[in-house]
Image (cartoon, rainbow, N blue to C red):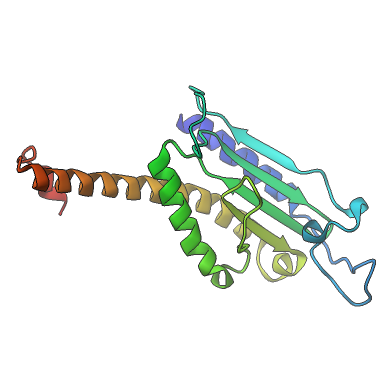
Length: 189
């Protein structure tokens, strides 16, 4: 499992490295304007085909309502910007709720993240927009490392929150039913 996840991250890293070869490109419609072409989509000749990298689970099941068991990343490039959209694996409805809350928390603070978009692309959980100005001011390899680490950390955070919610639910049920949990159950607190 870890080997396939590392191969997935390595593929994303290599694709991002090639997609982030962006340069300054003035608007073809308005003088002295430079807008991210991947967002506007006005000049089709400067927008590249999007690349979708998918990691399918070993046991694909029929999808539940809102539950998506595969992880995917869509990288859309253009001459002056790159948009990275991430769909995080959601194993059950609890993870769907936790992810929605976590992403909402991050998007409210999008201005602190410089490259984070406030609204993700439809079908994805979170999106980043990197323009040529950011690649001039920030190191390209550091941006790529940030996105890869972000993907790893969001998986870890959702798992930790899920464990915490399950632990609290067990404590609440034990309190309501009056049963005592197994020895050592409360050692985490």
